[in-house]
Amino acid sequence: MTSRDIRLRIILSPETLIGSGKADLLEGIRDTGSIAAAGRAMGMSYKRAWYLLDTLNQSFGEPIVTTSKGGRNGGGAQLTATGLAVLEAFRRVETITIRAVAEEFAQLAPLMKPPDH
Amino acid sequence: MTSRDIRLRIILSPETLIGSGKADLLEGIRDTGSIAAAGRAMGMSYKRAWYLLDTLNQSFGEPIVTTSKGGRNGGGAQLTATGLAVLEAFRRVETITIRAVAEEFAQLAPLMKPPDH
Image 1 (cartoon, rainbow over the protein chains, first blue to last red):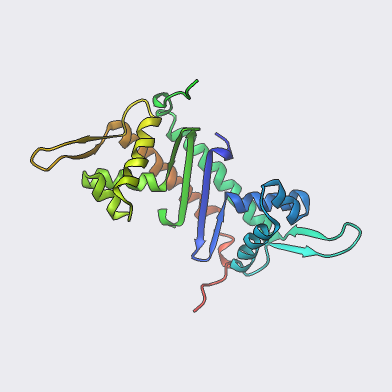
Image 2: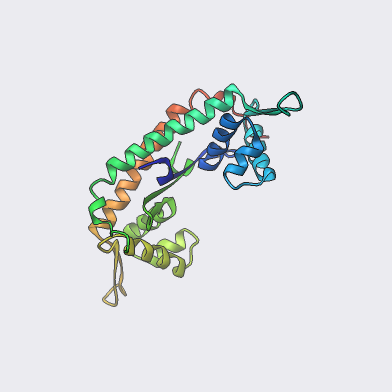
């Protein structure tokens, strides 16, 4: 089991949803320092990536992602401490869930039809 | 946190997906003995409910749901032992995930904006 084997969406409040897609986007921003690059890696338009981040930013009392313009590297995007905490909490829940799936479905695995060849 | 606060989809194999929707449907069949009634309670057409069950039945080496026709109660649907095991495994994973969310996001909760009034 890997994180590709589950899709998890957590509804923290009626206005605060985080799922695998938003988590992947936050991770991409953390790793690339760019909303455009993070979205592109997921086959997502810049507009769509911005929209997802905007909904996250609005859900929390403080920003999840901040952007800077100009400078030597032409600006960029960074996760805030809150953004990083949200991402890490989500990943920890994902890891726990994946382990639970492996344990709870272990007895059922032999029943599953092998893929057609 | 309740099961309404998360949406979980587990990809057991490329052809075997189980998510909150299918689990709710199996639970409905277990409780009502009827595919139509279980689907109706979820606002789902009979055709859609049948389609979801058919994909599940085909994924496993043995049926998840069996149906009987006629008889005093006009036939009905029952979960097989495998169907019940799948449902219970999914619910256990859900419970573990919900507990993990409560624990991992507890520190972040104070940051979340209260709903607008």
